[in-house]
Length: 89
Image (cartoon, rainbow, N blue to C red; front, side):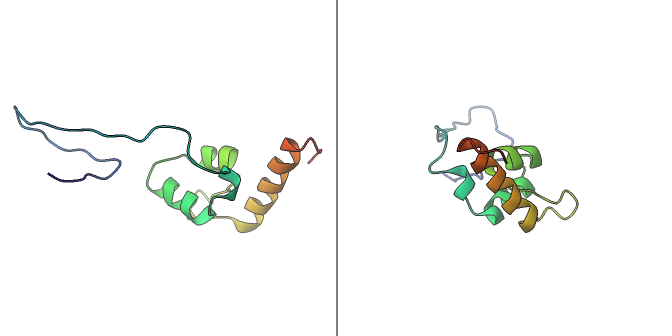
């Protein structure tokens, strides 16, 4: 028995038995409150795209360095929160 990472490729032999358990749901908490460094790690690991990070988490990632642009992230999150509150941002 072994636990595999969330994304991997393995070769199975004929007759192998696997058990696959996967979490479901949409996550927990406000996506705009998630630590931007964790979102950047998700982008580097291929779990989310740079576009998804900006749209859903309000985190702006530098596409070359794959790091968080702190200033742009603060502005993006403020704009998203303003739209959600019905304020022109």
